[in-house]
Image (cartoon, rainbow, N blue to C red; front, side):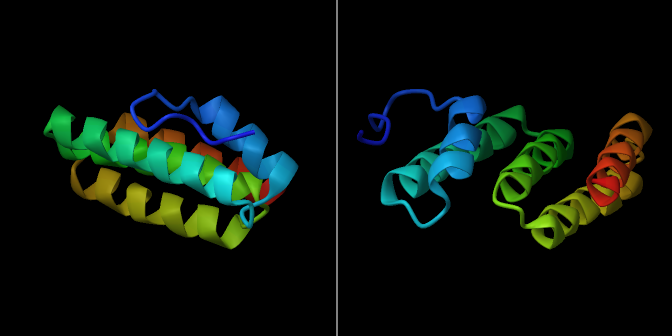
Length: 106
């Protein structure tokens, strides 16, 4: 099975499945991760606000969890949490704290 075509939208669900099933060493999986990341970063830039970047970091943390890199997920979320706090996005801050607590509890 090949990775997704270059211009095709890569679904996060598919990337997570590939990471869980094949691991990060698989070249097709990493190509899908790279494409998903590029697409999400482009959306964050297109959004033009720091909120978009924070949302991207929240989503990206799930990729770390999929490969059991809990430390990486928490670092990603901690950066997003600090930015949400600085930008006074209390809804995102609360969402991030809940997600961090869920990850730490599992």
